Length: 275
Ligand code: 13P
Ligand code: ZN
Image (cartoon, rainbow, N blue to C red; front, top):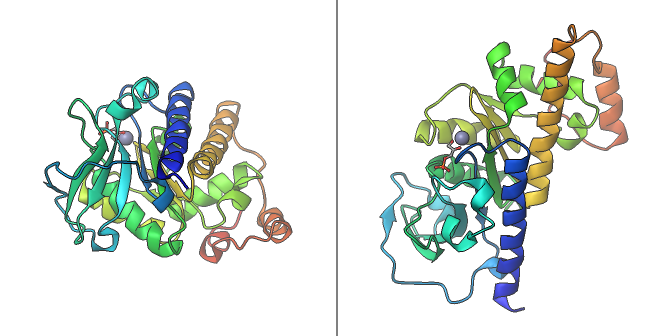
């Protein structure tokens, strides 16, 4: 296979998705970022080999030698499709996962997202948890989920349970739940480490007062995952504004759904909080 074919197909998916993030209202200004751990058939042709190595500021030995496509720090999602080679870049990690260098894109001096630490920590966690299947990490400022974190006292069990109970699809789409990360400085290693701890058990987490981070094997799966959680949060907010949530999916109904769709919900969460 021509090894540029996969890369160009990936660029098309990314530029469509970055536009979607803008249209959905999840990406004001430079909000949101995407990274993809490239499969062998997604590596761009004629990669550059002369750019400077840059220290990551942390070690990610489990990702040593991998190539990642990143959205650039400061880039506006609504503009990515206009100049993908400027707003996106491919970087290679050194064997120790300690430094990276640009091999494609970021023309005009771009650099990977300021959330590079959470992204790489997320990739490390999901690489292990999914046996290598998960390659995409996406972060966006999902308004309804963020609003929930301002209104309610949450932890992973409470947040997951709320989302499952508000929308029939949720327990089927994310039976392992949605992690909850108390506020941390954006882009920090502390945020990355806390996120990775949740992502070792589940594909998605919510950052308090900030947004959602989703992971999965491909971009459509990840957008679908985050969108389903956001829809459930939106339903909660609509119901709360309309007078309060009187009825929600019961434990019995959630169990029936799980059986019918052959998923195994996190037992610590399904059993943790009785409706
Ligand atoms: P970047 O522009 O550096 O990707 O940051 C956007 C963002 O959402 C930070 O959390
Ligand atoms: Zn953000």
